[in-house]
Image (cartoon, rainbow, N blue to C red; front, side, top):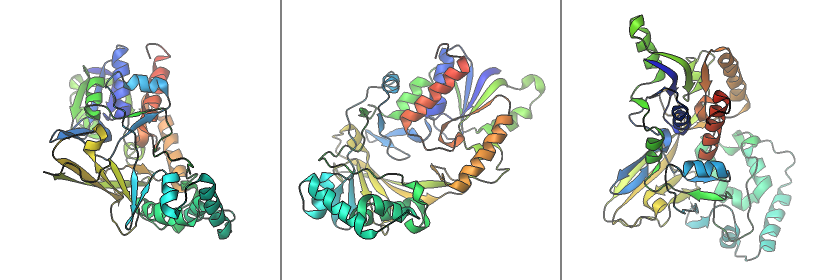
Length: 378
C-alpha cells in the first residue's frame, strides 16, 4: 500500500493533520502505540461519567478560528475552570484573586491587597532573582508564595524551588477582582461526550493501526519482501524527537505523571469542584479531579483521580518537557539532525519539545497543513 503520509500518533496534532489531509484527497495511515486513539486527551465513559484518563483537559482559546474549527466535531458546554487550592486546613480560590486575598488577610479592597503584596515584596529586598524561589517572591510576596506556589511547584518539578532556574516562572498573575475564572480566554468549555468522540470524528475514513509504534512499523515493513512493503511520501512524527533518532545525542528530559483513579459508588459529590489543588509538598499528589463536574453530572456515583508528579525514565509517558538551557541546546542539535532528514515532519509537544495548550496544538497542526498544501484546501 502506498500512503501520502504515515502519521505517528493519534493525539490532537496527528488527528487534525490527518483529517485535513484526507479532506484534501491524500491517503493517510495513522500509527498509535497506545491501545486507543486520542493520545493524552483520551476520555472513557465510566458509570456514565466521561473520565479524563490522563489528567484534566479544559479547552480554552481566544483564537476564534480554532474555536469554530473544534466546534465542528463536538458541542461544547459552558464549563468555566475555577479551581480551588487546599493548604493545610485552609481553602483558597485560584487564580490568585480578591477571593484569595480576602481569605488570606481578612481584607476587602484591591487597594488593601496591593499594599500588603507590595510591602512584602519590598521587605525581601530581592535584586535580580537567582532562582525560582526569588523570582516568585519578587512577584507575589511571601504569603502567596509559601502557601500556594512553593510546595506545588516543588512537587511538580521534584526539586527545591531554590534549585530551579528563575525563568521557569516568568509571571504569576495577580487579579484584583472577585473573578474565579482561571483563564482569560474568550472561549472555554468541555466537549459534551468527551474528547475521544472529537478525535473519532476527525479520523473517520482514515486507516488507524493501534498498538503499533512507528519504530515497530518501520522495522516490520523493512523485513517484508520489496513487493509487499508499504511505501509513503512523508512521515509526520508526533512522538519524542530524541526517540526518533534513537537518543543518539542523549535523552531530553521530561517530567511524568501518575494517575490514581477511584470509583466512589454511592457518593454523588466528593469535593464539590472539578479540580482541587493540594499545595503542600507533604501531600504527595498535586490535585484531585472529580470528572463529573466538567459536564455538570448528576449521577448517583462519582469518579475521582489523584494526580502524582513523577520522574521520567525511558519507557514512561513524557508529559512536560524540561525547557532549561541544557535541554534547549540538546533539542537544537536534534533539530539540526531533523533538518537533514528527507520527507519527515515533527509536530506536537513531543516532536517539537514544547508544552502546548490544546488550541495551540490545533493552530500549529493547521499551519503545518497549509504549508504542506501550499494554502490549497486548508
